[in-house]
Image 1: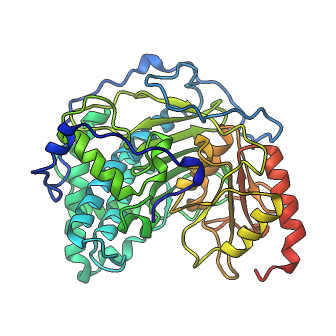
Image 2: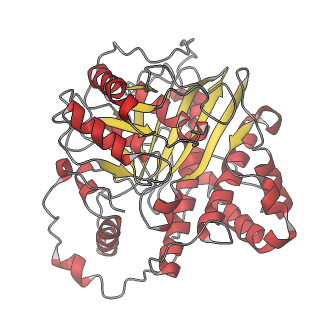
Length: 462
């Protein structure tokens, strides 16, 4: 399902003839291959640790815009490398590696499936991606901070992968994990001295058994958020957050198919993939316009940042051309764009459509798979995200924790439909959620949506 919005309309790029001539022998099945060089971790970039309060978003804060026509390359020196800086660095590297892993698996999936959707309950590539990301992120965090200090709450359970019938799946996951970890040195991380065994992979996944809670710290991971988007070659995300004493303190979103340049959002992912191959085969030297990104923030860090996914022959040097992103300045509902889930199974499109009409939203909704919706708000590509679950559905914390931190640090507001902060301190679910979730680029839009919900709720069937 392509991302589409009337605000994103633009002219189709003019392709040089050299690009067209270069398409005659493109191998669309060849897997992604990368060669990297060891990177240098610039410890001297870190400032002394500051004691920033872990407080929730102040909705009266100034709202800024991130709707510039393009983002300039280069590290934003305003980035505050204080509290949680080491955790953030490792988390970004882990998600970046996981994003490249998923991109390779998705390319393989698209080549093999001829566009047909595959299920997630067998040895399909999306299942391999789920397990492989979980094992990779767990291993990277454990190596950095010590396995005894790492507790992870994640979507996948190791029991299914441990069964005898899953031996082929486990082998595929192990091979995928080792291929990913072999590139660790290009991210300034030490790779395993020998390839991980199946037992070690199961051990890494087995560390993802936290039950959460109101005290201490634990990581929250959604290895592949947006399964349908993944198998259809569309949007999906890798989401990692750190929770401390019931509060998300940092969040990282890997968005392998979310283009760095906003104007390309109006085109189907398949179209962008073709143009990407054309530019690559023609030897284009510039930054790829459709390149995916990693977006991240930490509580009290003074902003949210975005960096492009690594291309071939490149290495990662923290913070790796990070640039600050900010929410849109649009506060007129008539000009605002709102996001909603693509899937209708666990959300009500009719109710959100009614709300959009009641507050004067005229633009077509931006329907996006996965937590990419949070990225769209934080980056200024849209202004409102609304989700109202159908009766019986309970929101899980791994679907929201990373995105909440990122939007709030980018200048936005995220609450439930009653205006209350989301609660991440009661296990795997967002307990005590008042009706639904509302994320906005600013307080004014947020207040209008809250008011519209109150006025419309009693007449809804939710």
